[in-house]
Image (cartoon, rainbow, N blue to C red; front, side, top):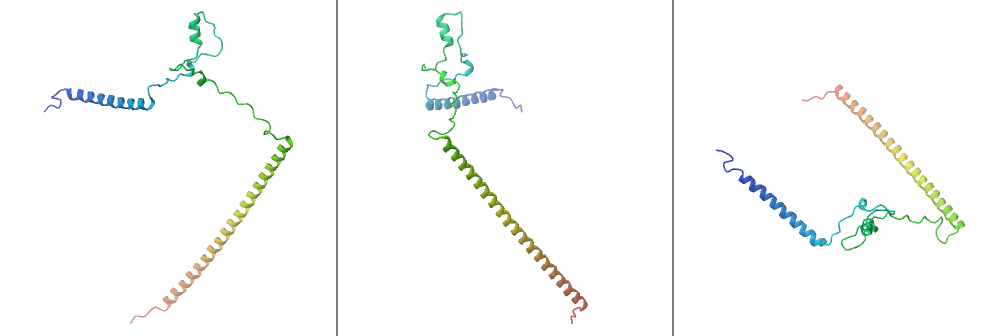
Length: 174
């Protein structure tokens, strides 16, 4: 029997159904998005679209030159130039905090340096004592291992002696 005896109608209806289902889902997503954001969506303006700063001299009518040099406007008539302006540099920090004089500032710096040195010394002492504790623990474990090894050797020798005695005097089964 021929596989395509009904022609490409099924394939055509399958594609048409897929397109309709896709359109319906996308339409539903779009409606949900519109409910969430509303109809007042501002289209983004790229910085490359903005005019270059500085006066431009054109040989056009005054109304056209004003429109060309004017920054783009949003749907509500607001100006978007503020969005794309370069961030202004913050003023340089003061040499010392407000209300302090040089002597107080230097004393505070010295106190902080001393505290840092003390913290460093304390950390080095703690690390030295920790290392000493670790080394003493390792040495005690090493001594225990040597003691266990000697004990095993002694037990092995004792076992070998017992085996040799049994070989010398075999058991007599009656």
